[in-house]
Image (cartoon, rainbow, N blue to C red; front, side):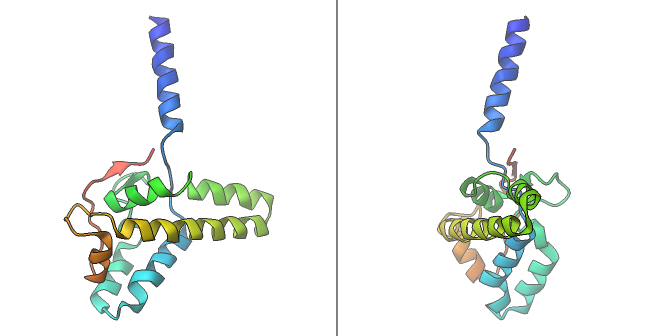
Length: 145
C-alpha cells in the first residue's frame, strides 16, 4: 500500500512540474491594451476591456490559476510563471527585474501573434475576435497548474 501511495505522489509531482503556469503580470495587460484596445477607436470595446481587465484571460470568481481558452493558449507559449520570474529577478536587483519584464513582454508579444491565428471556442480566430472588438469569454476555462 505504501509503495502505491509513493508512486501516486511521485506521479503527481512529475505531472505538476511539467505544466505551464504563466500567471500574468500587469505589463501583459498594458501590452494587450496597446495592441488591440487603445487604438481601436471603439469606445464600447475600450470600456469592456477596462471592466474586464485581468479577466480577459483569467476567469472571474475563480482562483488566479483558472484561465479561459485564450489565457490557456497564452500560458502554453510563455515559459514558467511570469510573476515568479519577475519576483526572483527583483531579488537580484531592480535592473534584473526590468530585464526580466522586457524578456517576458517579448515572449508575450510572440505568444499573442501565434494565438491570434488560433480558433476561439466561438469558432472565429482570436485575431478576428479582436478586430470585431470582442473579448474572449470564460469558455474553455481550466487551471494552468
